[in-house]
Length: 336
Image (tube, rainbow, N blue to C red; front, top):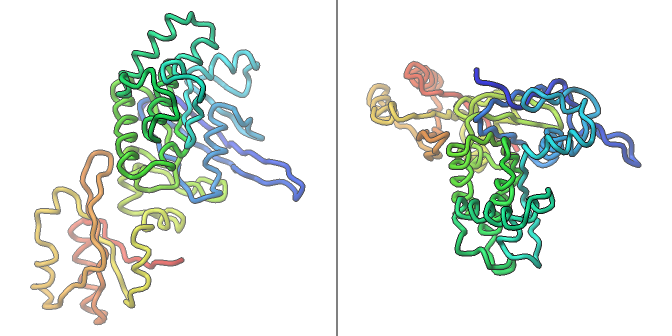
């Protein structure tokens, strides 16, 4: 176990409305360690954004405790809380840039507000524009930038405050896949090179698989599953987690098959002709319904969905064979 930098104890958040109370987050315990890239994932309405705003007390929990770097955030005065928030940077789906300021001034602006002299703020802004690869755009205005470039400016603006923690609330949802990949690579570099702990809020499993080392799954305000990304990918335990992990293969439910099995391959098992061996051994062909390779926390992982033969005895033998090979095999049902 590493050193905790964020710790939630029994955190709940309830909102009051004309239709009554809405419990957006309920009874969540969570520990994020220094250096993690921690994913918080769930479908729309799961409570992800409310939870991330509880981390820096932009939303004050109705119940529970929030500790950041050992400090009880709930016990701080407004002035003390404002000081602690300087260590917690936040980037959003929408970039929140000042359209009338150029890129350099956008990055320097929070530093100037915090009382830093203009020349020092601009020098620091130049440094972090270089970090995000946008030095040549210092004099450009937001309207002249692409979505990916705007997000890089937003990241540079946060980095200029020297945060210990970076909260990313659906930060790539408005970007195309190629730009998303480049932004995720940038965040990974920032985590590695600057030692900043990152919390990623997303509804996209591909984002979690690409960049995170640990993940928590939310559903209707509750944490339903938590572990490493590899554990979640290989063997999701709850229905909510399965919906997220199997989202790309949901079309398979339309293929008529009594039994299907999901088989996970890693770099070691990829060199063994497992399908060929089992076909020869049982003298029964195997129908591949889906196959894909993912990069999870820097490691290649493959998955296949196979249609099992209608003969129960042979199908059972196939299931046992895959499990004996430690392939993370699990029979699956796909539901809407």
